[in-house]
Image 1 (cartoon, rainbow, N blue to C red):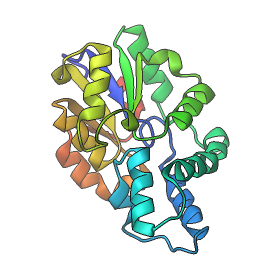
Image 2 (cartoon, rainbow, N blue to C red):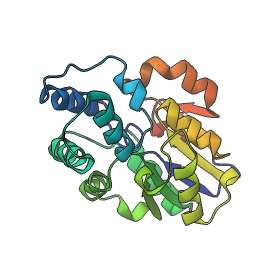
Image 3 (cartoon, rainbow, N blue to C red):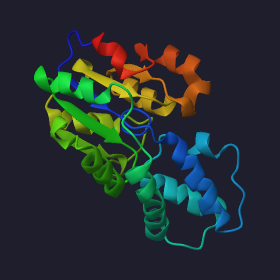
Length: 215
């Protein structure tokens, strides 16, 4: 899958780190503060949205009294401890990043998460040196499935989109990579297991773990 590829771009949550499980927990706890129940359609509705877009969606849908900045600040605080103590790198990630670095294949991150939490994750796992560009969807006009975030990182890496390989774990992310005219490898994640058939259909490749790439 690395044939004719000049750069690799990764999603972060569910792709590089095992963190998707905790966001549903945070959403449930957060809504409970306002005496609200967690709607079953919520995760599908917000999938792919940037941190800012998600905050705006919550404020509008649940008629929250807090400002967008306050909502995002509360989420950051709720997630901070979990990222620090409960979220590991996914299997094979460090080895694959090391392989890319050794073979001088530039890598970037294109994530919907907040900059504060991205920086925390990068520092905690000491993986900053592997990436030449780290961008969040809050830096572009539209979150995934819009291609904006992937095109921005490709521009940073100075590579043509069609020579980029994207790793993504959710449908909206896979679509963002394909909409950017990039090759996409879908990554298994327990959180999005129910969507595996569609992820396989939409993507160029599918892996259960990054460990598979080097073996």
